[in-house]
Structure formats: structure tokens, C-alpha cells
Length: 404
Image (cartoon, rainbow, N blue to C red; front, top):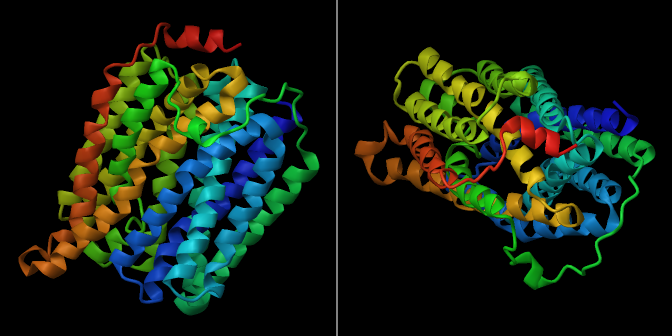
């Protein structure tokens, strides 16, 4: 690997560590501040809505300015948004900082595969799988680190300290990136990014299909993978903080393992693997919600990425990169990923509504805690329907060869 690839891997490790801490601690921190589930849903939904057009714009801006500058600023702003919540009071301030953090994180998320593809086209599936796998493994370590900090310092001091640590890690990542990354020579995009361009869907047919399926699937994911994810098992089975942290860490490990191996799998039919990944992930999410025993429920829950997202995520990334035009790669990748994420806007709101049903209707109180996970799985399964219209003209091996 060249220096840029090593640097991308290094920043992925640091970003993964910070993300593992933040995504576990932040919902628990909000709950400790007395913020309700409905209000949490609003915070996460507003952040999701704010990032859509900005994410497209940032992708297009990278076509004009290059990848280095925006990637670096994304790390800086993500660090700020991660460390600032303990210093802020009130729902509005927390929402604003959540918006800053999520826009920055998703700008980095947009640029990361672009950097890998431009550095190593021929082996992109292998590299994106392994780099994402390492990142998720480190996220697991970050979640364990957060759980340990909370166990040692208690919730009052542990939540703020963990967020400060995560913000500091991202500051280190931004500094290393700014000092070491070498921008590739490339012709800058000629067009000015207009408002019309943001809403223009002049994309390859397969990119439009990925976009439509992604909107449905991301809505399903966001019903469960939001503020409620690190709270569900504590609410339903009354497990301890440290056991909850261990489970959330295993959640990251289960997506990392298949990602590390996907480049070596004999994938011949990309569409079939893509479709089955959606279905299996949805079935396991719905099933874990209805199982009444902790160990069995947790075991089924851990399968949803092991045999789902760990396979389809790099396949989706490969399809998006392959069918994006070279001179518009940033804006087209950003556009697909941004509009895909619109499904996630309503997910946290839906979770808050489903949980609130238990308060409104006492007869549902015992089962309402399962609703976000159960309905999440059903919507994920529905996301496979548009994928049946994918037209991949070449087998997987030919796609890889064509990228060289």
C-alpha cells in the first residue's frame, strides 16, 4: 500500500475509536439529562434532515477543491461535535451540535470510499471491505472503552469524560491527515454547484435503483439503529451497563468480520448477494425483538450484520463507485448516499412514536419496547424490492477488472 492508503487506514482506526465511544455514550448522556425518547427522536431526525443537501454539496465541492481539505475539515468538525455536548445545556443546543457532528461524519463517510477507489481501483472491493472491517473492530473497542470509563467514573463524570476523549482522538486524526496526505493530481470539475444540481437525478440507472432501495432500507435501519439501540436491551432485559457495552461491542465485531473477508469470497452474482443481505438482516432484526430471553435475543441480534450488512455494504459501495462518472464522482457518490439517507430522517421519529404507544395505551406497555426492532426488520425486508430491477451487465469479477 502507498502512504495515502496507510493514512486512510490510520484515520479509519482513530475515527472508529471515537465513533464507538460517541454512538454508545451520547444517547445515554441525553437520557441522563432527562431528555425523553420522543425528544431524542426529534434530535436525531433534525440532524438527519440537515445533512442531506449538505452531503451532496460537500461531495461536489470535493470535485472542485480536492479530497484533502474537506476530509480534514470533516474530522475537525466531527471532533468538535463529539466533545461539545457536555458543555451545552438545552435541547436546541444539543440538536445544533448533533447536526454539526453528523454532517461532518457523513462528509467523511462520502469521501472515504472515493479516496480508496482513486488510490486502488482494481482491488477496491477488497480494500473497502478490509478497511471498513478494521474500522468497525476498533469501534467495538471504543464501545468497550466507553463502558469501562463509565464503570470506573460513574455516569455523572463518565459520560462527559468519554466524549472528551473521543473528541481528542478525532483532533489527532485531523492533524495527522493534514500533515501527511498527498492530494492526487486531477482535473478539477468545471461546473459550479447550483441548487438545481443538488436536485438533478441525472444518474446511471443502477445508481437510481440503489438510491430508491437505500431510502427504504435506511428508514428501516433508522427505526432501530438510533438513540434506542444502546438502550433497548437495558430497557427490556434490565442488563447492566458493562454487559450492555459488551453486547454493543460485539455488534461492531459482527460487521467487521465479514467485511474483512468479503474480498476473498467467491462472489459471482452481486445482485443476489445484495438482495439476500437485505432480507437476512431484516429477518434477524425482527426476530430478535419477539424472543423473550436475553441470550437468545442477543444472539439473533448479532447475526443481522454478520450475515447481512457485512456482505452487502461493500457490494453497494462497489456498485456506486463503478457506475459514477470519473469527472463527477464526488457529487454523484454524495448524491446517492445523501438521498439514500433521507430514509433515516423519519426512523428516529418512528421509534419515538412506537415507544410512546406504551405510555398512551397501557395494554401495550410490556411490548412497546420491542416495536422499534420488530418494525425495523419488516421495513428492511421491503427494501429488497427495488433491487430486483438492478441491471449489472457484468459479473462481479468483470466489474473489478473494469475498474482497473
